[in-house]
Amino acid sequence: QVHLVESGGGLVQAGGSLRLSCAASGLVFTINKMGWYRQAPGKQRELVAVMTRGGTANYGDSVKGRFTISRDNAKDTVDLQMNSLKFEDTGVYYCYAEKGLSDYFGQGTQVTVSS
Image 1 (spheres, rainbow, N blue to C red):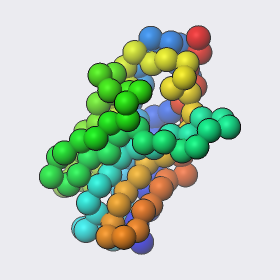
Image 2 (image 1 turned 180 degrees about the vertical axis):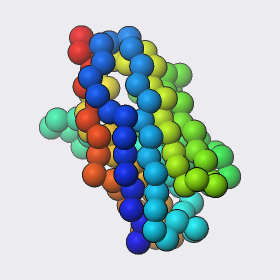
Image 3 (image 1 turned 60 degrees about the horizontal axis):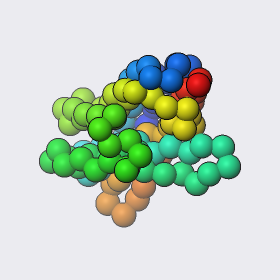
């Protein structure tokens, strides 16, 4: 089992920045991908950014050029730096980890961008 705990959400004005952090615990030694998904009200959960253990990053189209994912394999943490935030970035952001054939999500942290 993998346990994920997010921090860093909050309220920010459009154009501002926020940084999310996630720490993994439990059976973390075979985690491959770590990253972030989000879900806006009335919408499906979508990819924000994920990074492999080797450092390859993949971003959702809507956040490319604005968000940056970083990962510390030694500490089992993953961060998301969000710049130039837009109203449509509002939602619950979930930390994600892939371990073998299993996907794990944290409980989520709310990000609200005021226009």
